[in-house]
Amino acid sequence: MEISEFMAREKEVKNLYFIAAENSYLRAEFKERFLEKFVPVASRDFNLSLVKPGDNYLKRLKSAINTPPMGAASRFIISEINLTDELNKNELADLTELISKIASDSILVFISETTPDKRRKFYQLIKKSGCYQEFKTPRYRYLDQWIKKQFNQAGKKLDQQSLKVLENMFSNRLEILASEIEKIITCYPEKDFLNYQDLKKIISREKFIEDEEIFTFLDLIGEKKTDKALLSLKEMLGKGVYPLYLLTMLKNQVELLMQVKYYSNFTHDNKKIAQELNKHPYPVKKALQRSRNFTQFELEKLLAEILKANYNFLTGYYPEQNMALEMIILKAISY
Picture (cartoon, rainbow, N blue to C red):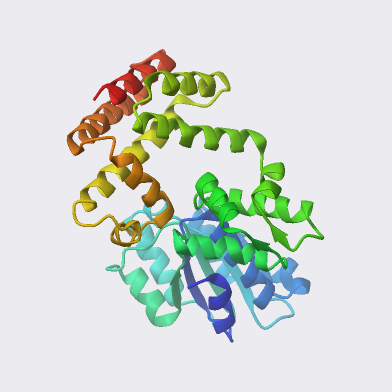
């Protein structure tokens, strides 16, 4: 369920909410929409408390809950919370006790990047007495729809190539995506239909070059073009692309190649494979083409090398990461 749909269904505010969303953009969007719908601007100075995690969290939250509203029917308390990090077992029991006695004129909203343990009394109390809702970060076709919606809300449409460019560059990092989309829309106020060339003029040039070159680099590895792959690697490193980022991109690519190659034993329909993997058909189609350059055994050996290198990068075993990455690429192509 999208936040806009959820808010449209909330005709009357409840006393207790627990909103879980791993993506900070979604958490911020929920908070903004909730305030807009239920908390009058004129009463926010006196009847709205924002309680953040930290020292004396329960004491501060209790104080906010027990403070009566001033000149209004209700007082709103919005609390950011991370149940896995902030509260021990006894503190969670105290919190459960606190919200079980919440006054009818207090509206308490928890916003969290983590979900509560559904076996605990805390979760059961929220489900019984309030509202529990999770908002998932959009992925694959849902991400396509999310991107289109951002443009549609501004009265604009986007061609399919541009949609894939945005998706491949930023994945579902919604904060960055929203920022880039806003930038594009602002730069073309009179244009209703936007294409790839329009985007290319606006999207952060460094990011555009980086991602385009990374995907070209991965193709060269898949095609086993040693000289060109090493030249591409040197050029990217020379521009300041972080070696660990490149290694991560390569790991993700190899894992996808392994999955796609396995399913290609049963079908060569990229849409069917994408459905099995719960992934977008476009990267699966590209992976299907690249996977023909490797055996499954070669991919397994390559992934083992990458995971080993990733550990050594993080522990500082490789002081010269650029050279280490070159060696990994040579091994990848020589398999």
